[in-house]
Image 1 (tube, each protein chain N blue to C red):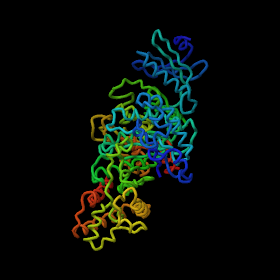
Image 2 (cartoon, rainbow over the protein chains, first blue to last red):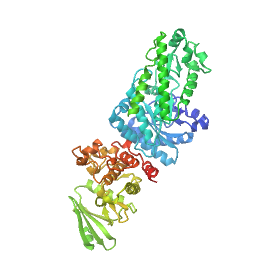
Image 3 (cartoon, helix red, strand yellow):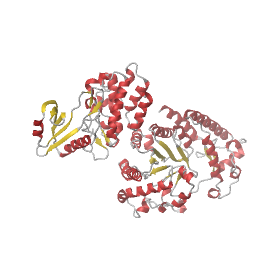
Image 4 (tube, rainbow over the protein chains, first blue to last red):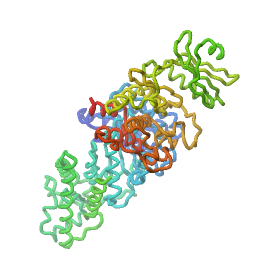
Length: 361
Length: 273
């Protein structure tokens, strides 16, 4: 698990069973340092709490004390790692590396050394699309990330600004895989946050953990999550049910159509003790009907556990599974259910192509 | 004691080399025995600061891999300095490349140099100028690293003018990031690159980026930047382990080389015991 301070206050996190905390880490979420969203203000070391009139220049002075307080709190929580946070930039400043190094990495490494904690150290990095896709940018970032000898791992957040619920750019996916592999080849542990089903694809590069969002807004990194929002502007997603066979979330209205037109519809959706309820959803089902998410947890967990350990075998297994999924989508389409871009299997051809590109890199 | 009187107190003073701003002599010192005298002038305070860093660094090291430092005298009025170091018996690696005639000998040398350089790396210093001329091989074949003139302390401010196209280095042995003066990328992996280049030069008997040997490129630095070099397996009988090791050290991007000294040493131990 990754503990999220924007959602849970410090006492609630510390109340979690110690054995769970020992196998999880805490993401300080300094992404928007001036934010006072959710439970962030409850953390005394959060930048806008420590500096009520937060500004960058004050933070440059205060970052050493803030780092120490954050490290001490993480040590107290006895999490699996000490995480060095990062901040989010809409557009990367020219001195991005310098700013992150001086305001985050160096203060945190210094605090860790002073406190004598011997936990594994993870560095958070938000990787922009251009840093994945452009060779020069990618090399620069990889050279920098791998230059810290006393950092043991990287907590990556791939920020993609593509529209649509699935990533359909095979080059981007292939380069994400390559990015993960380079870090692993450098002996670093790699933990990837805010993933959708492409997390299964990323597993081909052998990362140490991949976190999948339980809610749709957690399956893609969005900085607006850390900014105060007008409640009226919050848009509820349409109800969707996860199909492991199809590697896709199918919108409820399409499920009804599939039930109507495709006789073999039952094979498309795995069984769990929550499945029957999902086909009789209530009108306000979303936040008040956790069965959709519990079903997803069960189905996806099983799907992840079935992946072979060996990465080559895993690749073959995924390839076969994707081909089965593509065939299933063809049959659904033939039955008369023409799925839209967000429910169809168009992302799967990108996955297969990405696997081929990655193999050639 | 004035520089002139120190030199006068020595005997058998013999000039070794003479450069633009520095001359190097061997001599016998009444207290220190066989020594090297480095006598020079500095055009401005920034140059003196670089020399001072070299001296401070060497003075802080007590190791068989480095010459002992004895004295550093500066005469500000004439902008003259004198450095007195232990003279190491032996010859530069440049003059005895053929002593290391097989892969095991080369790997052993590299391993010793890693141990030597780790003394700097632990102090967060990058040597930046590893080349055959800066390594003396003792009669027992052990290396001594000399000339820390452009060693870079990673935590201190840079002494190179910002915006310089090329940072301080010897272009024929510099890593791509040094040639491009990408200071934020210069770390111990830049020294790893030079070790790989050194190993390959010994292995092949010539500089692997030399255009006349490679058949392409206009200069050694150009070939370094483009990652074009004569491969280890160009010499018959090269083992896969050795070839893979050298190629990894000589990768153009630092992230493609070994990340840490431990990873490099582990590769050596795993393949050569």
